[in-house]
Image (cartoon, rainbow, N blue to C red):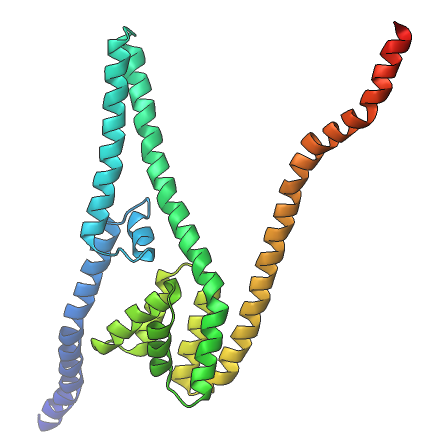
Length: 270
């Protein structure tokens, strides 16, 4: 009988421990599940939240202001077109159709304007990236830590990437780990170049690898990438400059060259 009780206790103790561990972990799993469900329900299909966050407007008030501006301009334009259509004695169906079309175009135009602002800011960040990487490389080579190097860049530089570094510094000073803040920066700025740079810094920081070699390599790659961007822009500009040359300057030059001969032929014919 004593052996049976001991065997039961041996099986019961691990089971009780597992039950206690499950009860400790289950609330966190439940909270995580609820958070994921809430995010899935409130997910913005137009990605306006993510785009505003990339512009540095991550609060709900910024999202509401954007939606109010977008819908307000669309409704105002649609109402003005409807009133003008009714005043000019057009049919009601045609006025409503035209006002709905104008309202939809205003909605799409404001959304495209937000996308163009993001692309412009992303191009500015990528243009500033080589100089910022070189400054960070020099600061770390002089003996500063990555945090102090980012503080120096945020205080001395004036650009979009330095503002992002200022956000990272504020997050670290509020208690967030440096690698988590840098990862948020890489997720916030939708740029492949910045994402690779952040991943390299986070990996080197966590594994204890030398940062100077990583930064030097990224500085060389950033300069090469910037040179390729400039060359591509120059090639597109060259093609666009061919349009006035071919369709405007060249016909005028041919006309000036042939005009004396044409006048002489007309005089000879007369």
